[in-house]
Length: 168
Image (cartoon, rainbow, N blue to C red; front, side, top):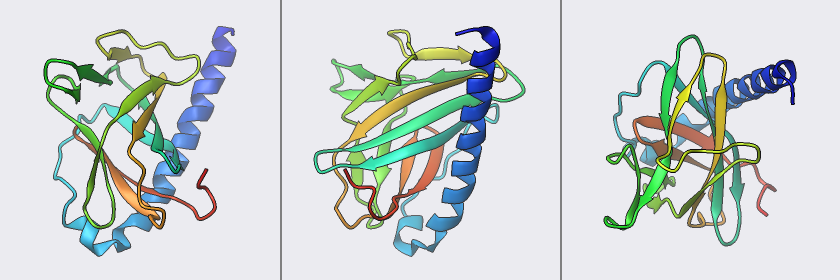
């Protein structure tokens, strides 16, 4: 894939991510109980993270996220499993989990790089302006009737909606 086609693919991904983020942020605030358990965070202003897809499956909930740098370089850390601690950590201190409308927490089970993406073993990436990285996060299955929730990714809080009929 040439530099121009790679650039166009990233631009398309960024546009889709910004559109999805804009749509989902408007639908979640009506979830009154959920708003009481969302953590107060302070994300780094130079890194943007968006949810590109949520798949509600019988055996797992799969969330695809895209991290991107807009105008300046940004550091992006992926969850890495620490055997000694028995859990997934972002930058060795933060966690990633889902919250459902009843404020139940669903811990991260696994992470996969999206096709064509290759993360270093330590999970730390330096994104240049205009570049993006996509990864897939696997969580325990949400209840079948769940229509919205929140992904907490370290200092980032990302609301999402699951459209009826998207269960696999």
